[in-house]
Image (cartoon, rainbow, N blue to C red; front, top):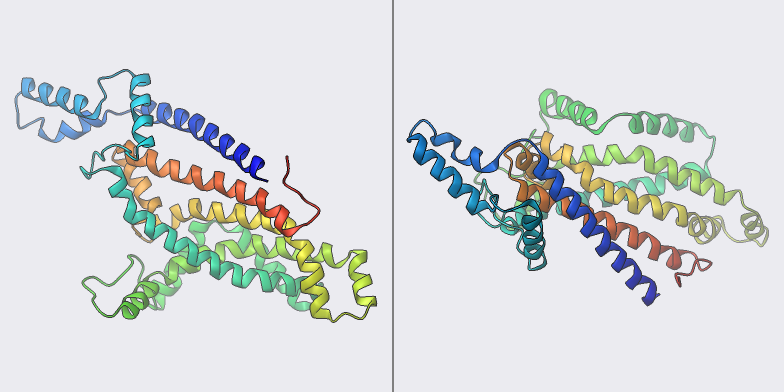
Length: 328
């Protein structure tokens, strides 16, 4: 197990190096000059000579006067020391700029994951147990509809129904401006503002997860060992949760962890539509304003999430199914 973990960590480091190389060169191939964008606003206020001087100074300050390969190695060396560079827009270190949106994104996604799993796991199991019943058929139709709708369409429907028509929830933001109270009151205020985004992220996940869990449980319940367990006189609860669900977990874990990773990237759209200052919104703003150091740092965060998700998926196999041993 230890040997396998070290092999996977080495593999993750190699992938990170390759991806960082590709991303750095791709971002630097995007049309536009961050240094010129910084001094463009003063072009009509100063002489052409002074404008050119300030432009060259901005390029030197940003390190854009060095060859691309040299800049990449400097950038990589900085990352290894925890330095992601300076933000062109915020005039602060990137690590300080992204820490707040990182907390917001993690907070939103963790809540969305818990809510979605709390609904989909019992619902999928119940539909598998009551297979072909009226309830199961209704759920299957609804999950197909939910699975087919893009997240931004669900977001628009939620905004129109609950914010515009019913006026139950605010349409954007994370808290009431200048609100102060006890920690519990501040938490309730935050959850009130996040009700729509969390609802959109949860609804967007219900369809695929419910159908997959139902399919895995249906396959497990049709196996011979389930018939044997029932023939031994075991209660239906024991048969379902100790035998069927345990064996259905192996394919489900792959989906859940993969879905968990996709939730972080999927929140990009939700954060943008509801004006939430998370990683997704900051990433789009960074691309728009050519703040590529911030964009690269956020992109690396999503790559790390995906790599760790794959590692956790592989290690989880051995914990869920004794037949699977991680000793490669």
